[in-house]
Length: 183
Image (tube, rainbow, N blue to C red):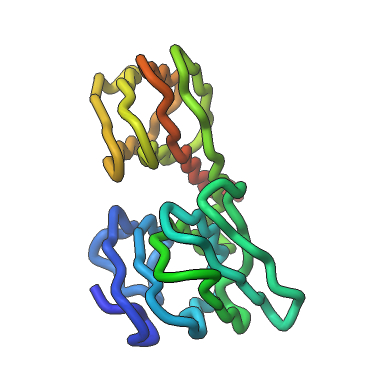
């Protein structure tokens, strides 16, 4: 689907509610290719985390602050999506993973996990997504089992409990946890 500002394209992985327009979503997980320098789309009331998946990386200038260099080896970078943000490519095009949540309703956390052997992930989140960046892993939850490879995702709604990831060789996954704010 086209970016909100028309500057590129996004492959949406999941959105809630699934029928909501972009300005009315509660949360969203997507991948995008960034081929040229330019501004990010503005999403009022949204917090965003960006993870570089491939390419040389980019420099991200958020709300006029000094630019932050992001590469595929960096930790995920969170920022408000409702302030002016400009990206400059370090080399050529990059691929990224975006996670967005509506600030007044949800919060999220994204972390990169290197899996060699077995890794256990406990969660109290309302939604958990495991995105495989590289390698291959097997995933087991109370909801079932899945095998994932590069660019595969598994999303579980109400995933309370323990998740087990296993990789014969090293796999790198991004763990996305989305929590509803309780009133």
